[in-house]
Image 1: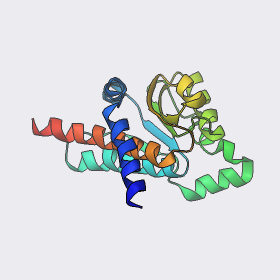
Image 2: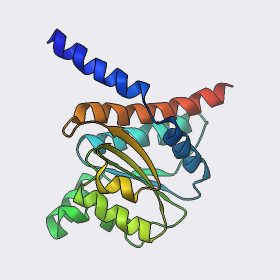
Image 3: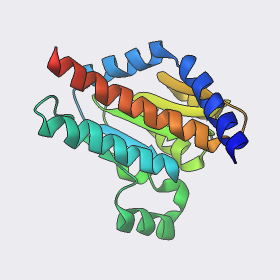
Image 4: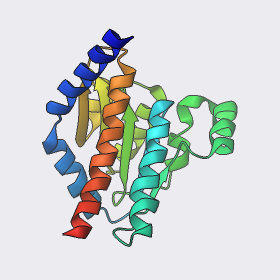
Length: 186
């Protein structure tokens, strides 16, 4: 166990040392210029990251009177997600929530380790047709989502390194959140 832990943390340290700071800057600039709502989508652990981002960037900054983003995770409403999945298929779970709603003033943050989740791609393709800015948050080789994104925060890892990719995605959230906290103190 000790050896595995050292190997895992060593891989994480390497990813942290090679973080794409330019994409982080571009994401913050996009958030700053967003005139509409920020929608976040993700499955599984990425859904948890989406919820955490709403907590930090929505409530956390607002309660501190730092910033008030209009931000929503489309993974958070279990009755809506299960009804859509049951009635018209899981591939529609995010698409149907943004259909006839998302605008060019909005941002869609799509989180997917593989970048190939069918429901993520369907919503992303729809949002792109509406001229919504797409922020892709990916891992592995980035998949189709990396190609569709206007801005992409990518964690290059071998396939199935979910833990490391999800760790880095959460760190992205905390970098953005901590940046705003830092700004408010300067």
